[in-house]
Length: 339
Image (cartoon, rainbow, N blue to C red; front, side, top):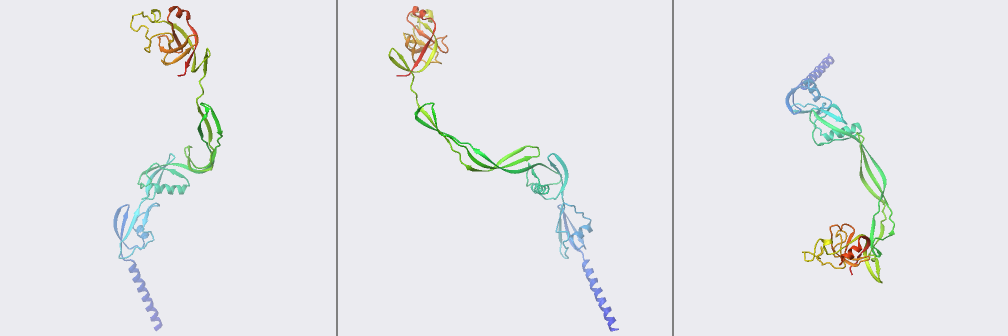
């Protein structure tokens, strides 16, 4: 009889304890929910965040973030703050193809693209601010590309060094040493865009072999002027012309002026006409140039004429008969060096 009473007593104690625990578990708890910035207070008897959200009818999407976690305990006599950051809907355009997506909220464009690249094992270019936080109904346009490194060898062109040599006549050169190209290793990044376009950018260059420069000696010595020999007399000249020659006098027949008229017998240079004065085109032979004219002798370019253009020359004669006798002919004209 004692044993029976003892068993009944133990059962009563056990039930009492369990009943107390059940009463304790059902005590109300304070919860604050901030859902995408909107705050609301709740009282619940749920023991975990997940139970509370289910009890409250709060739906959590795949890309919605909840803190604390769903299995986190809701503590008595303490306000549990639950924050929900909802995913955002975006339009993702990759290489012109558009699709709608829901992605985690409060994520930057750069972080989203980095995750997308990891997911697809591809690279994407974005022309915008990568630090910008993605907002609802955002449009993100990307261009796909692939990259690969290449290593190639290229020639390094050699330069040419010119050294003045006063033992060589001007215009002459002597190759003292031939040049040799060098060699370098180039590491480059090749970017291939989805459009098919390709870009190559050099990352690094390393010299394997330095180029050997070509060395040339260049003559700077003036060559002696050619020599014209007239009656055992030598004259140096710098240029020789074959010119169309004519003859003129100071008279009316050649100049339209008579003795006593203003400017009669005065040349374009201001010199008075005399034997040895010739008219030229100053664009070919400057006025004041000393000449030797075949069959005429020493002369000076001191006059011009309306019809004397190009490689033409007009020789002055004192007498009209001598001018007429000379007529027109081709003659050699030598530009003499200054003595």
